[in-house]
Image 1 (cartoon, rainbow, N blue to C red):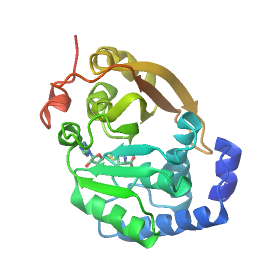
Image 2: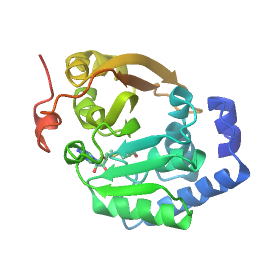
Image 3: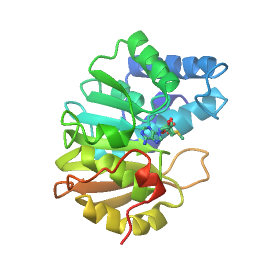
Length: 238
Ligand code: SAM
């Protein structure tokens, strides 16, 4: 394996600067340091952090293109994946991180402050509540999530946040195609239309990774998202 800079270029066709690489290296070291007292990640080695957190997060850009100037929401960001990594790569992006667990958001605030990242909002909230708020509803060009919920549920978290013409991006593993089928009804009801399922290849990662891109083609009906906890308890189905 090489440096983040080399791997981003070789595997994703993305050019990072030395400063961006330095910021990511600091972020990775800080993640592992905090992880000794706050449960932020199951990944323990710097090499795995580079590939499974940083490269995997950056892979979103292969589907969306550069996000500079865009308004982006990362729902269930945990320790900032993919949102903070995308912000480091695209400094002119306006980012909102949504996370239900405050300790994880504290880590994100710490990283953003130390790296001098501006234009980042932090919401200690459930996605279902954020999606009902005027300030956030249908306000984002892109709503993204990794490892948060199965697609029928995730569509109810993300699509209410996306403006007409914008996209939701779900980072998924091997189950992507099956989840897309299961989410057909939910996506349609919430105003989405499947655009593509794009495969992502990462170095030394056996599991296939996918980006599921859903375009917002109609407004989300006012009754969605339902109350916090309901989407996961009763995923939308015909
Ligand atoms: N996206 C990060 C990543 O890929 O490393 C974190 C993934 S972690 C498995 C899932 C995160 O989503 C948790 O931090 C959890 O608190 C958050 N989460 C789950 N459901 C949520 C919801 N409805 N609203 C806000 N955050 C949620």
